[in-house]
Length: 196
Image 1 (cartoon, rainbow, N blue to C red):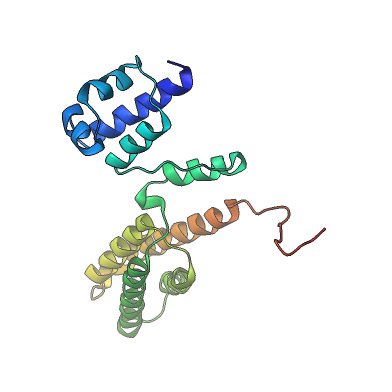
Image 2: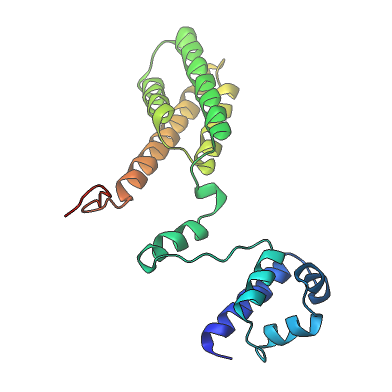
């Protein structure tokens, strides 16, 4: 078996094991014999295209041809964990509810004890987060900080935790801003309407 074939055989075996399927169970799904699957995984038989497609689909995978120049972007997307992806519309709504809860708590804190630089920094950060592209990990930071703000909202001893919350929000804000700056921008764009 060629090196390229070994890579595919290894990927198929990993997908089968990841799906917790035996070779026999996969053979029933793919319409192939267990012996055929075993030979492919061992590298003694190179699968044909139709067999490869059948195995992939039985493993809930899809074979796709990707332009070579887009392969780094596709690989980057595939390696991204769920916590690193932007929030879904539902997650975005949850984030906005958390941010509104934080704004309400800051307003109550200001009414009870007056304004402070830390509370103003929290308000500025929450205003930024309202429009920022948040990820699941960002929402966790926001929720945890707002929960802490909720615990200390009616206490005169709240100053150190409020300062810590302001620092947490500022760090999150900076991380998001730098993440946006790190996104590469194309040096040029190809317009399909250009006839040149």
